[in-house]
Length: 327
Image 1 (cartoon, rainbow, N blue to C red):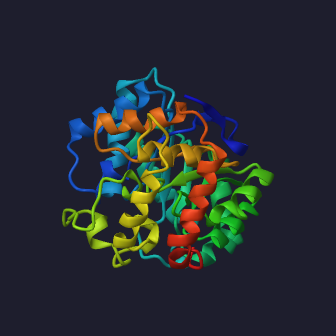
Image 2: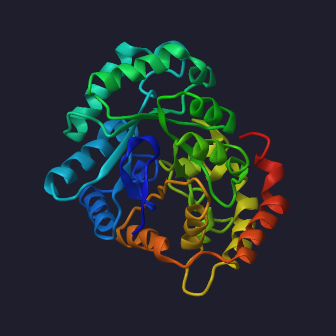
């Protein structure tokens, strides 16, 4: 597994990491033993980077990772968590006192004294331009509660604002063959500033796996059912903001671009890995088999230029008009 330098942090992480939202909530039920098996399969496949958040299952995802780390002290795993969604999404809630409380809770959940990376969890846009917020984040570093901080964003403009902050170590942003806008300005700006890029929702909530049809029905506790139109949180987190039926049709075309020996999902991950400036891509997995298949994408040969061009053409023809102006 290729390990890439994580910008200003000075550590290396696997180019394919593991997103663990699904181990907490919002993707249907995942049992504790199954969750631990997913973590183990990822690590055995070369993954050294886990991404979680304090609200995934109200801390369940963090707690499971903490339990796993205690059972595998030999595994040098870099764990990024997030904070900011335990209170209403108001800029005035992003204070040092709340940061102290939230990071204390995450440190306890993960069983560590110092968090490797804490990210603001898609806060209101005005937060990204608040000097007081970033001063508070600097205080967390000074106190040794966190080794570094970053932001998870919804829009390219939010990403660019965060990159301008000298203490920002990373930006987490949606990037996949159905979400190309970050390629234009965000990835070049991050690379120039030495800021790491964590690419999330790389399979467009599973669309790019090619496993779904227009008739697919998801469980009631799955965000792909209850947040399809942004009912609970930003629509971009579900199917990358693409209309489901239109996305299914586009995914069929995308699947035809997969090279021999690679699944559509692995092709999508390989595409993300190839984008200049990406540090790590964080697909989720609900089974050990999925975790292994995702990790294997890192070893695939680079996609040929014709395939890369075809991805852009597909996006321009089927997706751009839906999402490009919004995110």
